[in-house]
Image (cartoon, rainbow, N blue to C red):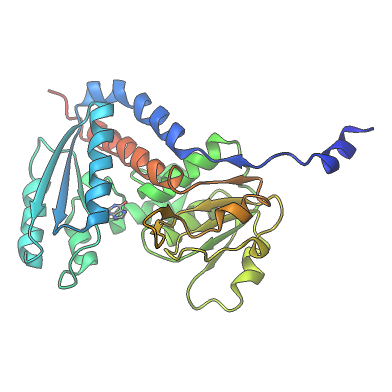
Length: 293
Ligand code: GUN
């Protein structure tokens, strides 16, 4: 029997996009540059959001692994917007700090865009500032400090040799930090991109066409197997908790994994890749600022 015939009897098995393993590799690969450029990451945390506490603990651990100095500045959720911006300005002018992130979400009385605008774009290792977002708009060559989650997703696809050029990519979710920038980064790699969101009519008609499906909504069980094309690559950015407290994504992993060619798990997929991309941005920012001793 020809090999093609065998493929129909034994279709190639679904593969896991193992973000945890790749992120460890990438963080380790940053060690030499970290030794050379001596980056220091400052993390601002406002309040005590439980998810934020977990995220920053992971970022701290990754910094320790890469040999990056890490400093946390915590403020009560009563801090005013002006006070927070003046704390950012202090870090902007501190030559010993090469990277700064303000952990989100922030309390409702604080306007996130104004806070992000206050961060020096050179130190914006989350890649959230309009200057850094503008650069990713131009072409992959201009991606200097790309937003961490989209950058982690592209690195994950590249690592598994998943082609992007000419593919139908469907992004579900149009946030400023994930959906919109990952759509642009896929477009600049010559995918045909559809961005869906809360107002999209007939979501399934779009997701069904996707060769690459990226889901970043934050709604458990949003994507079911009937919404996915056989052989699709599925990247799940959602982080939700089930009623019994377990982490899960936006995709019905158990059933979608039977149809997908590749799928990212939650946890262990995009989350660690975001942290790895943050580490790479932090080293890159220090190099650009030339923070030698
Ligand atoms: N909150 C959830 N994810 C992120 C992230 O990647 N960066 C920041 N600053 N806040 C977050």
